Image (cartoon, rainbow, N blue to C red):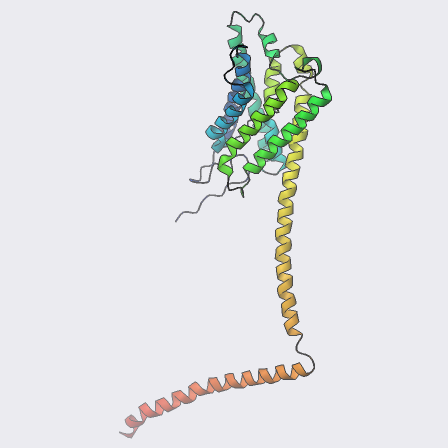
Length: 323
């Protein structure tokens, strides 16, 4: 009978449940890069090429569905981060090491840049779009005059922190080992991402994903790179908050379990001490008499079998000896 392989609570924690499959780092990085590429192509491509008079699929819903599809397709390999904020949240929560987290973020940036490059190349082939960079400006994250509703830097910063914290919290909660509904994590994370994107689009195309923000900024006007810092700092802060809260819950649960165990041991010791406390004054005499009677009973019980064995030997050996 084979023993199931235990999987560390990091990037590929969902991958080894049934057959012990443990992908290597290169496989996980490839999955992260390809999944992030898919997110960028869907999340940026749908709003880029949507006609104003025909909008069958909103860009926010497209981005959420892309997250769900990517997690279902590649989550068993890498854990399905596809977002530096989620990777940093897992790092703070203690689910992934620093080196692996850095490699994950690098792979996500490569995948995001490749996806944006593909979209930029497609834009260059459309005759009605004379300037591809200007077209990218419409889907690139920004604040102030580059926000759809002229949202200030503070407002975009706040919504990015809040949105990233909520997204990372949903991811960490749904992928927790004790969550009996972990199989539904792709749907929960995808829906949460779609709702947050719908909020972020009006405020400044807030992507809640530094890799996606970087990819679009690379192919937009110069102002996008100047404002890119906000779309890294704010998600990192939000992810750190969610990771610390999740880790605090986990530590509190561990301390509660340890305290319960200590209390059980203390109650058992107290019960023993309470029972031993009856050995004073008159109870000591009663206890001594009880012990003496028990010892006497055991001695008699030990002697009885010997007597029984002697009588049996005499009975069976007697006739033989007489003959």
